[in-house]
Length: 82
Length: 333
Image (cartoon, rainbow over all chains, first blue to last red; front, side, top):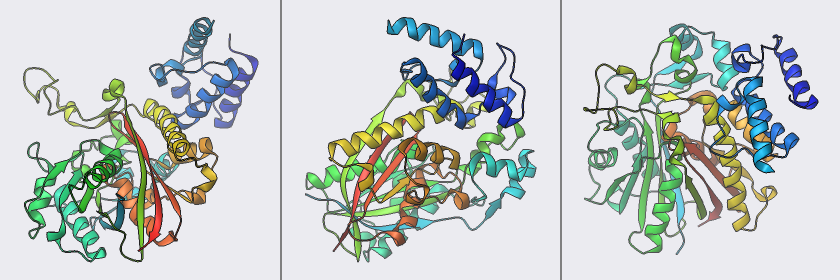
């Protein structure tokens, strides 16, 4: 599960773009919730919220394409941090 | 030994390609191009014009500004992503077109959009070793010739423009105002080589360096989202690395001259660095993304607003990935 603030961020982005939030495994890019440029801010917010640093090797758009992928990424990196 | 940029030159094709013209070809709306790039028009070469043609014009312009003949060049360094030929490189062709230029070393630097920065560091090193007195560097593109103009590549093909820029470097300042090269910080991460580039012709594509069954390999490809994520991070890191080792803060930088990739990227970078838009040079609305030529043209366009003592930060990120930053200070002769 994503934290409430991250969920709120995505919901707000969807409202501003006047699009529906996609299914768990559907692309946030294709849905119009995130684009190339809002993704930069979104990754920064994720790093701040979860206290993780996205490594250069993992700094790929595909890691943040769906809510499921974001959850998996956060889960893996939180465990790695411990 | 110091190193100064004593003059800048520029060359742009005459043909202006507006968003209205390009949008209909790419199957998108002109407004979509502006919203996704900030670009309103770009220049494209005609069929009979090559990257080295533009480069030679830009170099001659820079030499004229420096009040120097081509015979004064001790070393020529240039880059392009859209070369005249696979072999030889562009620098020997420009040396030939300058006519009066002596048989000096002419070196290609294949680092795309970061070409100015890499060239600056080489030129600075050459001067520090007293190997040369006058170095000319250039970046040139005729990349419109290699674009995929179908709707599937609209996001990429809307960006690129043609043009060339050049700088003259000398051990001493001249002209009313020169730019002292104080420091250059460079980096490379080849992990992402396939995220941005043109793969053919090349020897990593099978038995032949151009497989006719895969014509798409000849076209530029970019994973835009990943490239932008890295560009903003790396340029931010490069900025602070350079400032830290020169014991400067961003407040002490008067002007940022970035590679003109995309206006939205520049806005994201500005936001990350917490600097106001008016301190960032932007000309991509008129020229588009001119890759290797981009920072040269931006530096050329920055000249009128420079005053003595102004500190300038040049930032660039490109294929490779290669990236970096340069610190310049405007100095009177």
